[in-house]
Image (tube, rainbow, N blue to C red; front, side, top):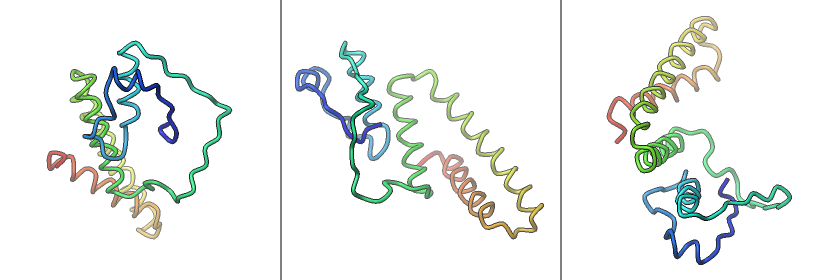
Length: 135
């Protein structure tokens, strides 16, 4: 949602610039909520066309997923402090379920399905990151 933003200078002066604690994800969502809570409106223009000339921004690698989870946890701690522990618990539960389902898939395909092996590796790394306290 943050490919292109137009923001009034008065709004930026009122709520401040983008929060630099976000590295790659959620920064525009955070800023939009800050503006909303500051009394500013967000307007979506569906006819607008933006051309992004680079390749994929993040892809589906482990580092990108970790950056996304880190940003999401920061956003929830900042704006919804009572929800973020529950969100983390639900996410870890979902990761555990995904690990179990992919292990079953791996067993059923005798380990021959590369996509299942890749997803299992991703989920195990994300689960490990959470178990280590999201460093």
